[in-house]
Amino acid sequence: MSMKLKTLVCLIFAIAAYTGPSKSLYAQHAEFTITTVGQFDEPWALEFLSDGRLLVSEVGGALKILSSDGSVSEITGLPEVTHGGQGGFGDVVLHPNFSDNNLVYVSYVERGDGETSGAAVARAQLRLSGDGGELTELEVIWRQVPKVTGRGHFGHRVAFGPSGYLWISSGDRQKFDPSQDMESNLGKILRLNDDGSIPGDNPFFERGGVTAEIWSLGHRNPLGLAFDLSGRLWNTEMGPKGGDELNLVLRGANYGYPIVSNGDHYDTQNAPDHPPSSATAMAIREYGLDIPDHPLRPEFAAPAAFWNPVISPSSLMVYSGSEFPDWRGDAFIGGLSSQALIRIEFDGDTAREAQRFNMGRRIRAVEQGPDGSIWVLEGGRPGRGANGYLFKLTAPTP
Image (tube, rainbow, N blue to C red; front, side, top):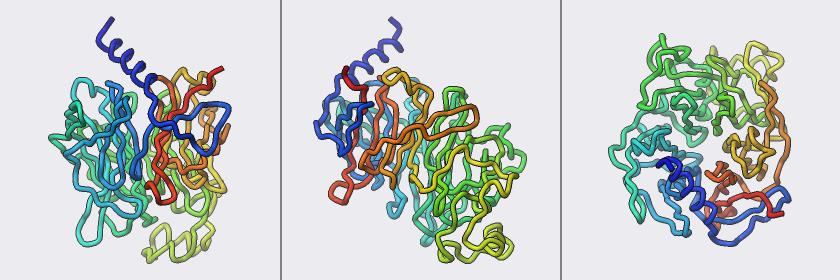
């Protein structure tokens, strides 16, 4: 048996043997059995290690490691994190060749000058030990440009694609106009090499600067990134007052925000002091708070699916396992305000909501386990209206 196969077999048995605490969700479903695995303080993301342990990030600036016996320990050596509003410590993703290079990628919010802040992505060596681990040789490889005031719409979801490129979602920071500004990487989806350098075949590479990072633009608050089984990239993002989106992310495409959206501006206070010549100011003068829907401006890429009322999509996962064979190739969206796990079926370049599971909790993240189980993180802090539970979903026993 090869070393890689031995590692996979050990991992499957470790995850399958995990029991954890036995507290159930408020809602139960015939399609799966729910087991409570752990509890964290405002968790944001999770990532599986090959030894059967699980990394969980906490927004306040912590990275925990959960062992198969239920014990939780700390990863030290994290960057300094600015925590407040929607900002803090975010994603954690292993390099595709982690078994050889021990590289891990983390996203977080860092302070700028004055009251400004912005998201950043760093990579580091993850040195594991029996009781935790440490990040060493940490290096920042990407930053939001520019840093701005405010504490919302950071995005900073991170994913590796089938070709080994690093993908980053960058929110508009609730500033509207940067989503259409090619001199800013806010409101964009970025494509980089694994060391943070820029691939020469990016659509705007010849323009240089942060423009060269851009793969697509016109995004608002993209919080989900995932590749389907055909290798195509999809993203979920929160719309304004309505119009949450699922997009097929295409090279060089402009998804139109804030010029078009299937939602509307909340109020005039939500559209502050835009330069008169900006896309947002011109749109507000012409349409008021009613943002034109996508069909009115066909030059912009339209979402594959959208939601009114909103679901508040927090995350996106495409299922490839065998635990739920009927769902192979489908996507799952974690819903915050909808407190739901939403199953998506794809049909070519289109998609539709196929099923909605009421979870009774704000779902911050959804991931597939190595054994094909589905893992979901409840957002929030214990004792503050949400409990930060981690749940494992498995097929029901016949």
